[in-house]
Structures are given as structure tokens and as C-alpha cells.
Image (cartoon, rainbow, N blue to C red):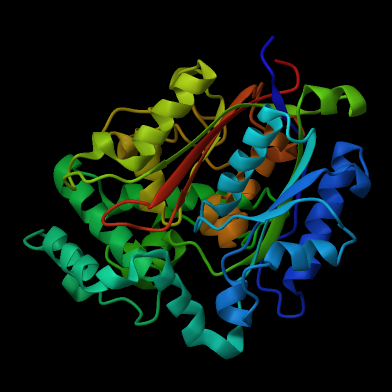
Length: 416
């Protein structure tokens, strides 16, 4: 009989900029919520995986971040493993827990992602931290690659210099967006449509960092960041945490599982050398193919998805990679409303990273929080009708013109 792995309990904090909260505060809230949601107690946890990307850079807390945060809550004796994989950290940690549960090394596991990114007195350091998500020995090569991609493209970017302080990731995304625009005719308005959709979705999510609807024109008229991107097309600096309790069949027999979501696939891939225009070998596409093969489903069977829209162009690219539309059709698909709540394939009903928020190490689990909530039918006004199969795509870092790591996770609901 196949050994299934389940998300028994899951929780997240509200996202925002919380000067008075520490990483430990955020972790305590998320972990306490996940354990209660699973119907177990702290002593039932047999192993834990912990993700954080900023505490070493911003606070000097290196190498044992998980032990520090969890010991403060009373966890003692159990194996605690720190997993750092850029924005894909907590989804990568979940994959490690999944593998250990499959192997029978534990029956009940905890996965935590937490990041405190907002330090108003360390503004320059806040943005320099993003550089570590790329090869620091190849910074000049990356900037040269960006210049080569955009050379000769007929854009209006020269008239929109953008604000001087922003994540270098947005420059990479902007270059890839311009290439996609040239190859497939994707428009700025279509990118803005993805952003406006998610800002609208976030008004129905009480845990979102931003909860203000925006029109397409308002998105286009916002402060320029890196052409074609404006501020409201880009994920903000965020503080927050999420946690999940997972178990295997033995664990499920101990605690029951009427609300548990089953993990059908967790694919993790890294990049490979390819031509920039060869999007069919993009890291996101390859991760999706692996996940679909693991789960034995196809894109037409996905009812709801959360994808990694660190900028709104990324959502357009990723719905193509996930197979929700043909290559080059991401922009028109979005503009027609097919990815909005009530559409053919709702994407980012949570509000996505651009509006819900993006506390880097926690983002993968935060995506899964939304999907488990949807699969349980507990999403309230943003509930996707009859959601039974869900997909999360979570990318991290950059190497060349694509993410350095990408996970795709597929879940099925308690009733399936």
C-alpha cells in the first residue's frame, strides 16, 4: 500500500512590517497555531525543519537559527535541521520532512519558515541582503546579461528610470519580462492585470500585508521600479512566519485526519544552461513536469494554484510553465480574467506575493497555508468552488535568467 504523507495542521501570522516583533515571536505564533490545528501537542513533534534567510545577515544569528527559535518554545532533544534555499526555503524544508516521513525516520514532523526583513534603521543593508540570492562572484556577468537581453528592444524604459533603491531581482525580472514581450507580444497592461487581480484578491484575506484594491490603470500609474515594472507589480519587504505539522500513516492513525490534506508531489529542481528564449526548459516548467509525474495528474486537474509572483510578470510566466495555458498566452489568459476568483483556474486567491506579502523564508509554507485552507473549504469569501486539487510553485534566488531553485507541490483535499 502506498505510504501517504499529510499536512495535518498549518498556520501563519499576519504579514506586514512589525518593528516590535522578533523572529522568535513570529515563530511562536505560527508553531502554536499549527500544533493546535493538527490536534496534537508540542511533545508529539519528533523532528523539525526550520527556514530563515535574513537573521544571519541582519542580526548576526548564524547557523543555529532553528535551534534558537524552537528551544525558546520548549522543543528539546529532537533533531532540528536548518534549511536555507532562498525564497524556496520552507518549501524545500517541507520536502525534507516529507522524505523523512516516507522513510519512517519519524512519524510526526514540524516545518517552520520565518523571516524578519524590515529594519528601518538598516535600510541599505535590507536591500543589500538580496545580493546574496545570486552568485556574488558573477555580479558583473549578471548585469552584462541584463544589458544584452534588453539591447535593441523597443521599449519606453529609458524614460522611466525607476527608484534608485530596490531589489536587484526586479532588474532581472524586468529583463526577462522585456524578452517575453518581444517574443510573444505580452503587454505592460497584461502584467498590470495580474497585479490588479491579486490586489483585489488580498482584500478578502485578513492576513495580507496590503488589503487595498487597485485598478489596472492605478497599477500602471504607480511609482516605476524597473521597466516595465511598477511598485505595485513587485512584492514588498515583509515580516512573517508559517508552520505546518506533517505526519505519515502511522501518525495519522494516532491523531486522526479528517481535515488533513494529502501531499501528492514535492518536486525540487535547480537551473541548467539554456538560451534565454528557451522557456520550455525554464526551471519552473521542469519542476512542474516532475510534480505532475509524481502526482499522476495534469494541469487540467488543478482547481486552484499559488505561484511565486515576486513580480507580476512572474505570474504570467509561471502559469505558462505550469501548463495552465500555452506558451505566450499567459498575458491574454490573465487579461481575460481566467486566473481570477470565479475564473477557469484561480491563481493566487491569497493575494499573491505582490499584495499578501513575501517574508522570503516563509513564503513557500504561506502558499501551502492558502491551499490547505482552500481544500478544506475554509477560505470564506475567497473560496474556490469545489477545490480538491491544488498546486504551489515557489522559486528561490537567481542564477542567470531564472530562479536558482524551484519547488512545485501538489496537494489533494481531505475529501478526495
